[in-house]
Image 1 (cartoon, one colour):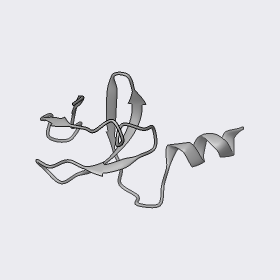
Image 2 (image 1 turned 90 degrees about the vertical axis):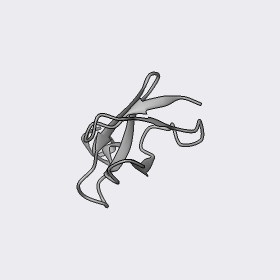
Image 3 (image 1 turned 30 degrees about the vertical axis):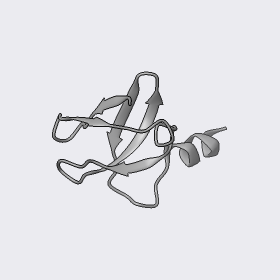
Length: 63
């Protein structure tokens, strides 16, 4: 199973392949921060502060 580093607590966490999709949101099992997948290979996570915000929506608006 792929692993990613939480940008908040810096701990490694397992991310299933079905979760490792850009724009998908998940919670860190260690610090419970809300995270969004921003890169698939290697998996990179970013903390999300607004539940309604999505980078995919932001990118579509810029086009």
